[in-house]
Amino acid sequence: MIRVSVAILGAIFLWWSMAAVEAPSGTPAASGASLLAAHLKHDRGKAHDTAVPAAVRRGSPSAQKREPAQRRHPESSREEERWHSDGFRGWPGGWYPAWRWAWRRVRFLSPDGSDENNGSRRAPWRTLAAANAALRPGDTLLLLPGEYDGVIAPKVSGYEGQPIRYQAYRAGTVTLTGGAAAKKGRALIDLRNRDYIQVEGVRLEPPSGGRWIRLEQAEECYFSGIVLAGTEIGETPVVCRDVSFFRFDRIWITTWPERNDAAGTAPLWRLHQCRIGALDEIRFPDGGGVALETDSECGDLVLRNMAFIGHDACRIAPGTGGDMLIERCVFADGAAPGAALLGWSGLIFRNNLLLHTVCSETREAGTAAIYSNTLFRGGRLPSGGNNLVAPYSGSCFRRLNLRNYQLRNDSDAVDAGEAMARTVGAGAGRKVPVSHPERFYDGFGIAGERGDLVWIGRDRLPARVIYTDRAARTLTLETDAQWGDADAVTFPYHGAAPDLGAYEAGIGTTGPELVPPGIAVDTAQVL
Image (cartoon, rainbow, N blue to C red; front, side, top):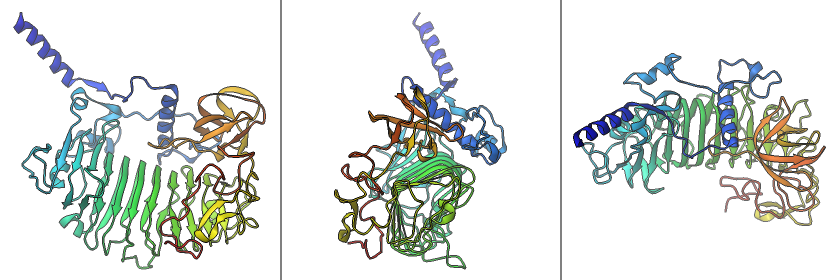
């Protein structure tokens, strides 16, 4: 009887380990809002595929509903690469063998380790090359304090719910130098045709001519708490090409490259054909040249908490494949967003500081949503939209001599703003018709991003936006709401009405940092 039971249990375990099961979501049950957000995320990703005509892209009046992207079997040459042993890039469509999620390994790397070890805490590997070859979807590599040669370039991809993670055991204690590969110009983070990769808390310091990061044909890649350092860095040390659903968060750049192209204008960071991603809190050094460059094939991008200093510091092109949110950034000492960008109907430009820069007013039909910005000693912004420009700029700030651009309580700009939109007709539910849906942000489906928190009506009912539909002119909310005709839709504010400019007096810092690192103008010198 015991032998029979053992045999049955063994057969059940063998069947379970070989069967394919659906990826766990991480929660017992998904809410209706999260399911809708996930559906819209896949919709948006498919909408920005280069094969989709411009007429059916997101925001177009003739936009059509699309089913979420599914990848159950290879449908292209790139998909077929997943199934070859030398180019395996993860199981398709969120499906994988059950034994994969039963393991979820944590592996270790140490300068005192050996590549003959198994990667455990007591027997860590020595080189990144060994880790790259051994890591599989769901694995986390903890890098113990020290310095490492080699580059981050995993042999396979992760997949949804099971990314491959490279993480410093303690932030600020791990330095990657790249070794021989970096001396030939290879980036220290080199992700080509790799998806679902995460890197956290490391310092990249390549040798002369080396580069920091290269992403190409990659999806769902996230980077956080990374320091980019070194001397004589190669031309354009950060390149992202054909990347979707990505995020860079808390990236500190300590030096400008000493090499440029023939014209001397090579950017430090370039985005080419990148869709649905966020750059948040990136610190460029106090130097010269082009800090960030995007092209017109980029779309659904978020640029937040960044400082652009000097003429031509940013080349942000109006996109043809999606929208862009630029908020809580600083443009100073001649750095300007550009009239072409500010005239693009796919732009949300809000809560930014423009200091000693030129910004031409645009009144073209279908212009961008430009609101709640502070412009000091510069040009003009479009009228309306709660922007703070002259004549208020010289006298309304709290401590201008200390580079504090928050509003004084007695400023004429306090309570001088208006609602961002009005409801169209009375109703109830989650889909709210509004007069200006283009002024609101829904997260673009990027991991870690949330849509705007808004107040609706006299009761200031708080609600979270999870999708904006410009064609239908509606906002989809995370929870049910009730509204009357022409009710105000605003962002949270203090007092009787919203204030003008990047800051809302009375509720703390809502705009850019008061003294952003890297600012080099006479009103904002770094201490």
